[in-house]
Image 1 (tube, protein in one colour):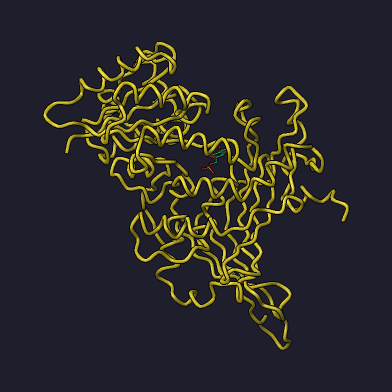
Image 2: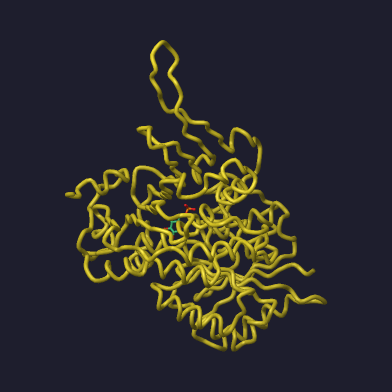
Length: 451
Ligand code: BG6
């Protein structure tokens, strides 16, 4: 099979610099992508490929502290740039000619990576289709947000599905491509001792929490439209939740995984907006230059309608500018006679691992009990393993045509459906916004609440 062409729309954007360009460099320098892969950087402005190469080098150096000249030579060989206005059909004709020029005997698969603002989606999709760039060998890789609410998501899906088949569409959720998130499903499948406990009778609460130390950096426009709930809960955290709680798929095929995931998500009960909490870090409004009602912290309580999960409390929580960068899935078991519950924690990042919290007797004459953790960390067990970045995995899976780690259209709609009551309530008024100092812990954010 011929090597692929990876077309990046929005090559000069923040995501491209932080994640995509270093990922492409790694895949080429480590021979994971074939040497004659082509990368086309699409930008609204004229972009000199050498300038872009310098950017790649800087991004790689910033991340890895080292940049291999042979790897850079491969990127140089692969890279070309093209100027394109998303609303200009003639520019897409030029793009097509450029892509056609890479075909020899075999037709290359084309990955169109959309790292563009939401309002550029529509003209790009329409013009790709009008220029005959939507045939079966063209795959679309879409970055979130997939809509702004249920209705806009429906419209967006309709627009894309009119021009591309679902098999051609890869909706990226890079949290699903993180090593520990991948391990979650494998863990559930291969450790059957937990299977009899995986239900409401034994699990009191599933708490998924993702906090970040960083604020919104320079992504003012994006964040003002998005907010914490849309940015992380509607996408990454609901997806992690589904992998944690869904019925195990009949096999590990992409189809079977999506059937289980979708089934789980469609049975989540739409949120009770009155129980949700939101907050904004102090200084946010100054940063964005307006008095803003956008939340930088959100906590959402959910319930599931399946008999298996009736009674289990589900909590999804996220915040920016908080004490630490950490993503964890904490499964708390019912232990009615203990002060603290046994829990199983999946440390998604950093210091990836799995911990089991137990109660043990303190050595000595007394009967004092205390908590202790069985603690498995990837870095201790798997030494000298080259880590695969989530974006490298996302790109390779799309090249291979494996959709397991991407969100399906039905999953996207289901997650909006669940959160729409909160979207509506929060849009109607800014009441109930907690204000927190940068560097706060999750407990501190809601501590001003008068019960
Ligand atoms: C992105 C969000 O999807 O995930 C960002 O838009 C967030 O706001 C980022 O910072 C976090 O990703 P990671 O992999 O650094 O945890």
